[in-house]
Length: 130
Image 1 (cartoon, one colour):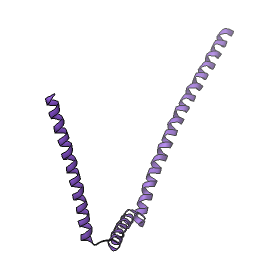
Image 2: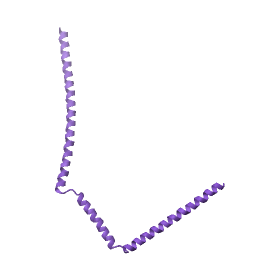
Image 3: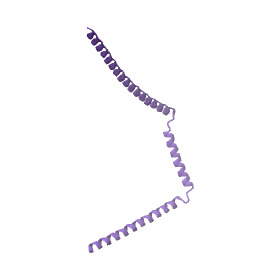
């Protein structure tokens, strides 16, 4: 009888230990899942708060895209105005000088291409004769 009682007590302790391990495992999984839910809630809240903040700034007129575009356009206009005011020559003279420089550049390129073409043609004749 003593052995039976001892066996029953050991079985009860074993089952209680298993129950404790199982509940600890469940508590750990639930805790992990709760942490995941908290983290997702924080990310969602932060994204929503950012969107609300952006909308509020846009409604208050703090969106600087239009202002920055106007400042840029004003800077371009001021640069053009200053360039016209302080240009060393009249517009027609400047355009003629630019056209002449491009014409000279085109002539030099044509001369180079022609000289390379003559050198290539004479080289091919030499190879045919050999």
